[in-house]
Image 1 (cartoon, one colour):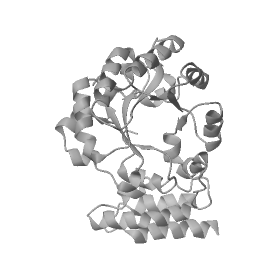
Image 2 (cartoon, one colour):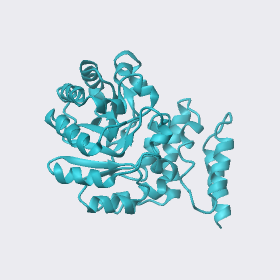
Image 3 (spheres, helix red, strand yellow):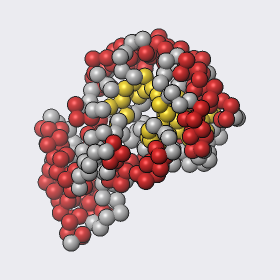
Image 4 (cartoon, one colour):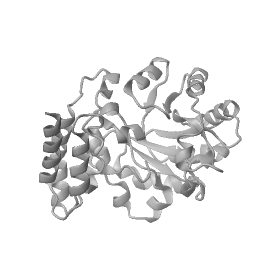
Length: 314
């Protein structure tokens, strides 16, 4: 998620699930072509399986970005056609691309030619005054014709005029039924759903209705234990670590980051919600929020936060 996640967040999330695909925040194709490649593309081997999410609307430039990213060996390449941010609208990528399905088809066709990894698309059910029941199947059919086999659908429209990105995540009504109908209409495709899903029970219910996957965004960030610990059961895997074991699993990664000149808060800011709803969660957040950005903060600060949590919970 733009302005939220990063490689540290994904390593943290990986301690809670071995199976779930983790997605990078959207990186624009021009940034990869012209910018600092390692800073944009490096990630920890622990993150696998991990998908690189790209933004762009120029087929040749997207193809070049995919070719450049090849040595990084992402498990999936995703084209974002769902983000409603004004920053992406001005660059003609994200949700605004749903107005140009033929262009999206050209983009993914060019991307597919440059990689052996699956190329997927994340989209909305429509934008602005589009009729989702007409537009969405036409969009799916067009990009499937270009070779896309997996589409992640955010089950809301995006209003590009009049709503902020935050409002676009909350105000347009959810239409999970439409996404389910698309699976019935396109059974040969892998269709995943996104939007308004905050619990594993909700995810399982949607999978049981025939969908192939569920993407969870902000709920996994704010309350990661509730949405990621136990998620592997959806694959028949019993892996479900205790949240305190997750903290312990992060210690070597944090120590390495600090030894290489990093700051504690760069990692622990993603860990604040780990104990959401549990006794001592407030103390955990307070110690990390106040102490992790101080000069010299290290594993002792993490230990103090954990001690505060356990003292309150006792």
